[in-house]
Every structure is written in structure tokens, then in C-alpha cells.
Image (cartoon, rainbow, N blue to C red; front, side, top):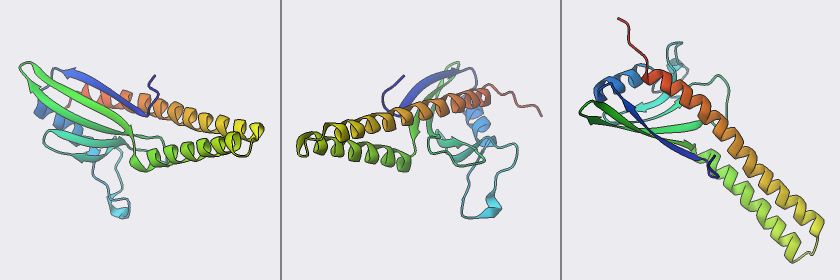
Length: 161
């Protein structure tokens, strides 16, 4: 398990780059969350943007989830299929708040240990900073596991016409 909210993987597919991108774009919807007319249908698994060689997607969810990973992917052609380079990251807003509160709590613990000479409050703040970051990592990696499973099912999907 990584100690940062980031994970990467490389997948090899027997499908061509065009077929992989077609699978992804068929199950991805570009959504404007401010416009109710763009709500997703039942056959859409991901929200995001799919380009010619790359994509930026996240799993479709029914309720908010701070630790939902953003999946950044690039697809390259090979002689016998394609290679997918995937990165799972926290959304920038979620990453900001995890880092912000961890730094604030560490600053309070430094203040209590150094200037105030209050070991109890310093220890409480330090434990809370570690707990905040550890829980964020735990929930992020749990969501990555779910998103990876759904993405792998999408790539192995056989289109039936």
C-alpha cells in the first residue's frame, strides 16, 4: 500500500487502441452536474472525458464520496494489441483538504510541544493528524480497489451487437 493517495498500473490488452477507446467511450458520459438534463443512464459506468489517446474518468456514484479516485489513462498501440497506462489520484479538492488539515494539525502539535509545553494537547493533535491522513489513505485505497475492478471489467467487456 502506498503512503500517498496515488496509484498507477500498466495493463496490456489484446484489443487495439481504437477498440479500447471505443469500450471506454461507450461506458463514459461527459456530465455537467449543474445541468439536470445530463444525468447518467443505467448503462454508463464512468463520468469524464475521453479523448483520442487518453481519458480522464471517475466511477459513477449515487451519493458523494470524497475519496473517489480520478482515473487518468493513456492508451498506446502495440503490434499485438495495446498498453494502458493508468493513474489513480484523489481529486484536487479532496487532496487539498486532506493535506490542509494534516498540516494544520501538525502545526498545532508543534505549537503545543514547542511553545506551550503542553504534551497532552500536542499528543492529541499529532494523533489526530496521523489518524486523519491514515483514514484518508484507507478510504482512498478502498475506492481505488472498487474502481479498478469496474474498469478491468470494462476493458475485458465483449461488445455484443
